[in-house]
Image 1 (cartoon, rainbow, N blue to C red):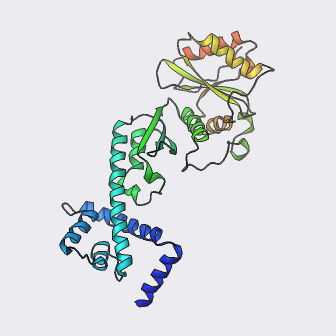
Image 2 (cartoon, rainbow, N blue to C red):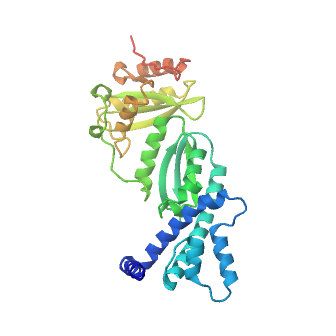
Image 3 (cartoon, rainbow, N blue to C red):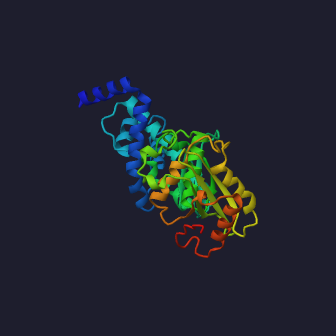
Length: 318
């Protein structure tokens, strides 16, 4: 047993006493959390520690506290004191983290969208997307999540979100926010590339995809080119804005002076979505329109179709 204590102390000196102690205390707190919550009326770990410290008076026996409350036996007094202190700090952090989570989730909508988690300095920690924002954020701040959460996400104190009308819009918005905000938890792998995605060659062509908007009176027109360029144009379903929007789309595909609309080539995301979950999405081939006026007429006919979002429509001009 003396050898065990000696080895543990040497390991702490080698790797850093604070980090090891915090990991042990976090592990013990997580292990006991489920049992403590399940037993009605039983004090939580922090309350038990504080209660036993009060009972011991001015000279707490930390080795005994570690053994009786944390379940760590034969720890030296110095190590036991550090473990008890770390456990109390982690319990406080967890409670504050849960309070922030409850406040965030109470305000979050239940619809689809993208979200950003931030720390108390406003730094973006994580960008994600969800079909149900409230449910996804609740999973981020669940009691079970605390056991395995990384140090960065444990700093989350706030969130912001934007509701969207389709999965494709969420994918593009998420990629744009990761590029712009550079959140520290998201893995930065660079712009998407068609070569790394299982996309049939027939799909990698100029295309206009029509997807729902978050409001029923509008749609999103997503234009993509094989060179990676893309842009997204919201437009009203009644066609009142189609003249100017159709001209912009026509120039995007046909102008010899066309320039990149967005600094990141996110078109591979569009093609990848079309190859999988977006197979039923309505779309247009812009090269079947000889003029911007012709493209406007095709778009107007597509938006007027009642089956626009109930079945795939690929309008071909004859």
